[in-house]
Length: 171
Image (cartoon, rainbow, N blue to C red; front, side):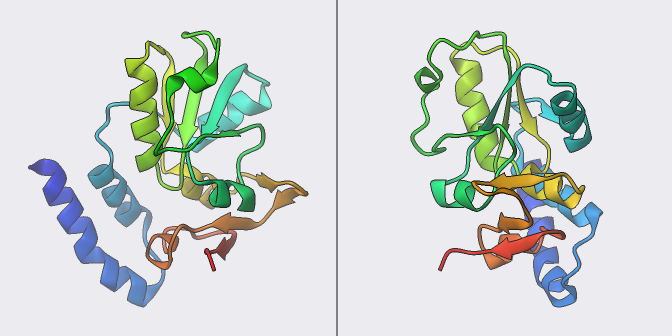
């Protein structure tokens, strides 16, 4: 019931925020609260960046579509299809290895994280706010050519939460 109330409140804000075209951090936090089931622990972008800078051994899974991944992704990330992902795709990865999952905002990645937990992975984290929050905090994304400013914004509705970077949509 509470989740439905949060989602309803967040959706009521959407038209107003679109008209202003400047969502607030509080509005984004409210939206995320409505989307997350909190079944997978979260990691803040700053903490993940710190781990990556320290060359911490972790598996980074991008749970967006192949098209989204091609536009940009986090350095070292491996793309997995959120609709068909099975933990067996990870082969012989240690079940206690740190695995960080992310998507645009964190909803699809939470579903993949749940599958990993059910398969016995014990150290799975979901990136809070997803790639949008990562970019909004000023952290880099990459494509085949290197660092890029482009970010697949999923749709114009969801793209309003992406405040930095160059928004790209499917044609």
